[in-house]
Image 1: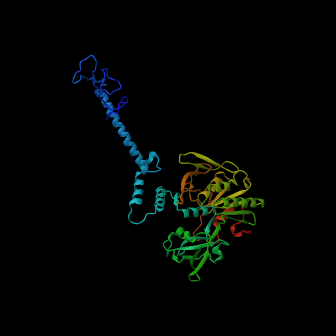
Image 2 (image 1 turned 135 degrees about the horizontal axis):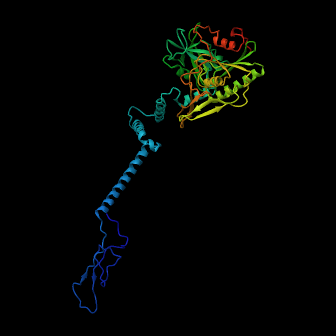
Image 3 (image 1 turned 180 degrees about the horizontal axis):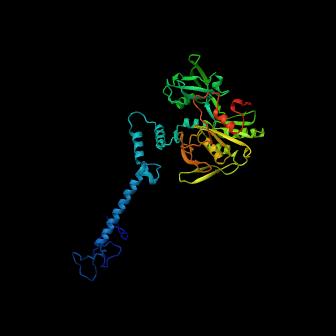
Length: 474
């Protein structure tokens, strides 16, 4: 179909008029008839009709025709590709252009589940959370994980040094007494109260160390993972939970406890060896713990104690900011640790100023074991590399990575993701290796609970009295 000639102003017509040259204003395709009429000429009938020659049309060569056809085909292809692109963007919303092909299977699966599944109603929020969980789990990293909205809040509270619950330390213990640390719960693995926190709801309700919890809100704990059972015991402040407890002397009893906000005591201090040694046991690395540690250490130094034991045994870690602050109390300058990102870039985290125990005349021993991990290893590794402390005990856990906590919108929880490695000041990566103590001490399983060979060795290293002769100051 050709375009209309812009020169034409109306339909073709035959007008009686004197002969004339073809009007350039008329389409050459029209036949314009001129009827000759003159007063001097005899009348003729039919009148003579003069057909003017058609204007010349440009000829299109075969090459030009080919170009036109190709251009038309290219235009059609461009139109179709634009349509396909539009459809692809619509079916893969929010997907970066360079990754659309990779995400097509995901969106196909999501649409099939949400639009075609006939097994019941589909909760889109649950489906989306499951997809996120699967994506994080696919990394195969035990330190990266997705958490539901409730679990995310609880975990951050715990790391921050507080949580909502009954206030009791709970663990899994084998029923035959052969050792601790078991899961899932069942006839061979018991849910045991290690100790209630002083003044917490569990303590006020009469819960005692050694109590075996068999039911939570009248439902058996058998088959539950220990962490899942603990999550059921925890809950919002002001809500009740009923525990069924078995004691060695008494039969099963039920205890109703109203939950509250529990502030965990992460720093426990005392004086040993007649006041010669300041002993500080750190169980976590929240910001509160770092502040408490600094205050306690400063009090020990003011009291004239020049020998310090920092006990990090069984401490799983916490915030790296807290680790930096604690280590900086002994190290006046230089790196506390190095952080290496996914591209291999290394950045030093330097010591904070004004540490309260940077004087080299203050002797320091740090206690570690296989339960000392992450932030505990940052502190111990920094003091060891800086030759600021002697490590006593067992090889540490070996966690040399840093996780970042990322909340998600629309109440879909959040996740923690490994975003960097950390290295000691000497750039040693201890992941899956751990820190080797300067003085190794093995603790036989048969060791009585009132004896502590590691603490005895620490006091020996410091030239102080053994633990059996220690004096405890409140």
